Length: 240
Image 1 (cartoon, rainbow, N blue to C red):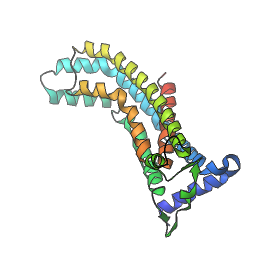
Image 2: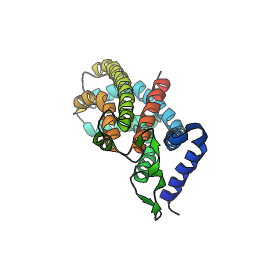
Image 3: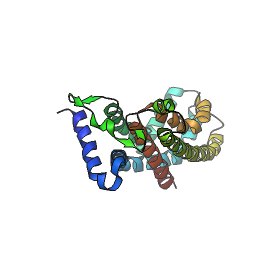
Image 4: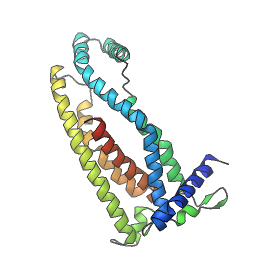
């Protein structure tokens, strides 16, 4: 039995378990619950990433001093910064791990609700819906039925939630970057080439989720919406 088949059975079992509470939307509720379970599993890494972010912020004055000391030797600067991170036991990549570890779950859901058959049998999960929207459907399918329609209203609700979360993340990112300006000034205004352009783009990254929700199957979109909402709340708590 393949991992894909086992995962399909897990979703079916969760949907059956939630059927008495959620009725026809039990499969959608199962996806939300599955997403929450994944986020709980990676929560320790998210906490570690938050601690790492605070530690990296605390190291900025020392890094600024290293930049002044090795201003004419980029290789020595890079080595000195790596040694500083190792000495303080701070990993520059710790913030990436929670997101990377969620990718397999997202792609499993994407494939599960994009496949017409599982293990040589018809994919029964494609018969499940979130209100009037099929979990295997996409936003373009809802557009084909005209807006506002039953499926269209489901997507409009998801877009509204994603936009609200993205706006919240946008404000937090802008505040975080604004707080870093004094540190950059203390560094004599030096910055990594291309960092200025990245700083301009970063606050808008959360809005790219709207595009993801529009192009993937609704089941995968539910995963993305639930996960990004969880992330926004989690970051607000961990970085408060």
